[in-house]
Image (cartoon, rainbow, N blue to C red):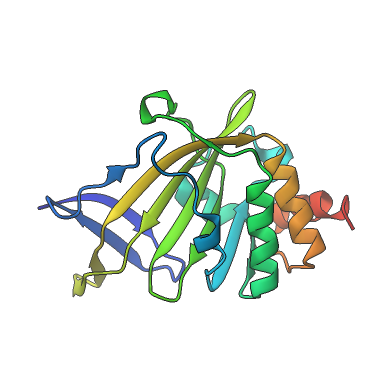
Length: 200
């Protein structure tokens, strides 16, 4: 086995995913698996990290937009249900991995489930549509500490979809409707407040 990917967790701890025969990331078939919205509604916490539209031309990787972007989080089942409705109305459709362009993600939705699994939607806006990489992280199989780092093993599944460009605006509208508190870097928060204020 070898280390293949390092991410920073919400708690600021370094999480390393170990990849081997059992844990090789798999891509879902382009037509075999549509988004399971019913399952998404069972999440216990939904967090959205957004880059304001006036910052969207500055490319960032996932760790950067999580650090500097605006975040909205809720454990409210009604708010989560309304978020899933936004996704249902975003004209999401599957695409083959070969058609997925490796663009820089600029925003994301992070869903945590009661059984310990997680699903995240990483958005990469393009000219006509938003490309989304849906990454499902299954339950942690093992967790040990090595050199003050958590080493966690879990299966990873990926699905590639596209959505309407209006999804970003719809997410800001959702945050305004749910009256969620905006957290993050001051300049980003101010820009996000301008976006959400359009819908209040």
